[in-house]
Length: 139
Image (cartoon, rainbow, N blue to C red; front, side, top):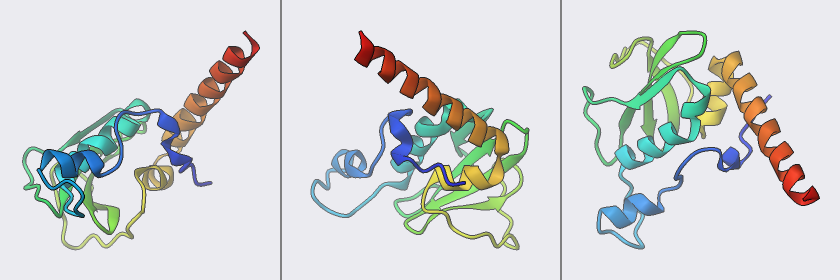
């Protein structure tokens, strides 16, 4: 079950536009992956135990690393590039060159495959949001 519902505005900022502006490259395709990684973290932090952009591994315009601990207490190091996100290690700040995992277009798709508890938390947040919208329409 894929839960990539346009992230349902459950998190903070998303998209690359802010990153381009902050770098002074308005209207270009230049993307700062550290800014995008921060947006990824803000979008799904509610559904994991811990998630943060690595301060140890080098981030650049084309790559950033994100550490995540799922609600099952499994730790991963994720690589974020133009190709998407993928697991590159099974500990914080650890890149294992032998790990060959597929890229996911979204963090939602990646976490959906890694963590049943993420899927449940996302579904609960969606349900709460829908209930709140229904209450607002009725009042």
